Length: 380
Ligand SMILES: NC(=O)c1ccc[n+]([C@@H]2O[C@H](COP(=O)([O-])OP(=O)(O)OC[C@H]3O[C@@H](n4cnc5c(N)ncnc54)[C@H](O)[C@@H]3O)[C@@H](O)[C@H]2O)c1
Image 1 (cartoon, helix red, strand yellow):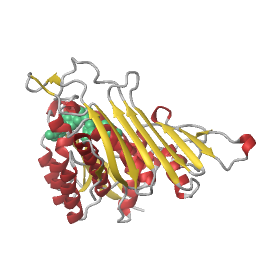
Image 2: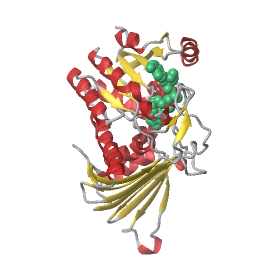
Image 3: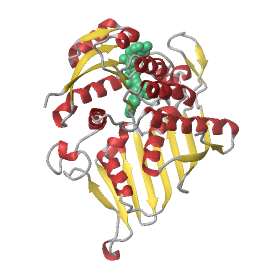
Image 4: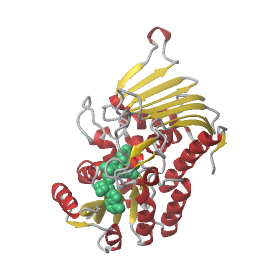
């Protein structure tokens, strides 16, 4: 069967630009996709550096203004891997130009911004997706399957953390390349939008909508030198964010994210406790699923430590032989493959922009609750 050609225009060549490019190159080799993917152009503001990225990854051409990229008739899909303050403008322009759009998370800096993006892709009726990649870790996808099988019974608790330690130094500046996450005008928020957004997306995918939250946030270091102005300026982001939540299904949750947990680099953990079963997953050991089933015979009952690497477990038949694990980068390949498989059939692949908006509505409620010191409902 001849495949349709799909020309990609990537914006941003940083951490995510690399992760996505790797996925673009690998997906068609491991999955039978309806499209032939072509790395047509990459865009970022520094032409020399973008040229060197293009040469390394095999992009055919470069742009230094994303508007030019979006206008190009030879581009079918715009992939946004640039900082959060660029997402809305680019996504809306790309949708208006009739392109498929994939956007990094968080979708918008606020839910209001995300809403304009949802309206644009839905009005243009273009395939769209947000890169909440942790849904596609095979062990996490397996939890979803086990839940859908009905094994857990009623759900009581959900517990999630995302811990890092890279901003503890008072001398770390804010703003500019590499440090835009500390500048609230670019990032929108601190760990709430950067880290908790991942936890929230996975949680709502596994356990349904969150209806209300009660949060506390803290900015431990109140002033930092700004890389772009050279001046010491107030820090507007949240350094740590913790919240309690209620899900629509009646279960309760705790969420915690910080960049001040010394010794932790990217400790994303989640646990879900149901009437019959519990499951626990840890990003530092991402191919393992800890699973407990109370219905096991009591003499052998205990936590199972499942090495998720067998061909009948999610995604794994596409990779090596049973027993051999895969890693972080594969989550992006899975997500991209799922997106193209769905697009080929004219279907949407979650998380869509609408799903990304749902997460932004929760992060907005978290930040509001931290200010009001009240429980806040999550807007619909
Ligand atoms: N899904 C995930 O797990 C994950 C992980 C990290 C980052 N992210 C998200 O990905 C996005 C990018 O983060 P990153 O860590 O790759 O950042 P980064 O700082 O490593 O790279 C950002 C890139 O965007 C480019 N850029 C900045 N402004 C631009 C503009 N106006 N026009 C064109 N290019 C521009 C920069 O030159 C750079 O190449 C953010 O939204 C972030 O939240 C998601």
